[in-house]
Image 1 (tube, rainbow, N blue to C red):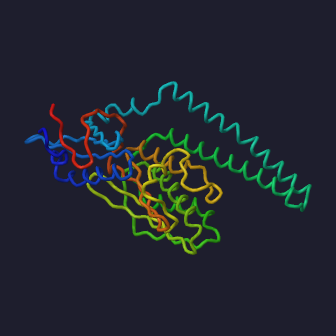
Image 2 (image 1 turned 180 degrees about the horizontal axis):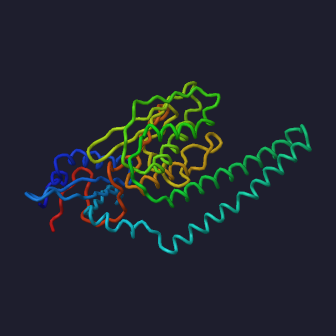
Length: 331
């Protein structure tokens, strides 16, 4: 099989999906995953999981392709997903630290509020430092809440079942209603599908995407946010599109990093944790995130997930591929 294009080794229905995922890996530089099958002559096709990771070596980029038999994937998923003792202890320390922050931060905000009432109207030389102190404390409150939410996402354990995406989307919109007060926000969508997935994961990912869209459409007289879905036999792809400020496509890799920001905090509030939480949730439930955008022309954030099962993170190296072609190496 040496020298053959890897995509040609897959079943017919998986070849186009592999090509799309392969190109997406180079465009976004984010890990990509695909569930497909390898034909075995007269025997039933072998279900496999393909993981692609793009890396840079000098002036060229390479794609590392990992192939895992799906049965092995599932049998080892429990041990692979379970955190070791050291990780569990670290997570406990972080959560405890964040929870201990809440009370002193609340007391500081209350103290500043009382101080303002006692001082009354003051000149800028007095009021400006108070305002800056309040903003700094509020940033800490927001950051602590974001990290706490991220840590809770890490502790989610999958319960895959039939979920009505229409119902999930209504819940996400209800939670985001305070962010739409006094704004002209249009959120149209066609009738959505019934999926096999974890509802908590959907709420987290769509909630973070919606909050992000609302934030970056504030400068628009009318914010337009549209949820759409595409499905194949093995995958579904959710996308949330907005007409906001967008972003330069080469910066897409930074969007999903922890504390990754493309805009100054003075211009757009936030902690840089929300999209990282969406990425973490997607990966934990066997999917992957993606984003497309253009400066001042909106953006789309999405989740590509398996249609009927949860995947783990077990990997078995097979080969390296260049961008122009992916051929099977001689054994």
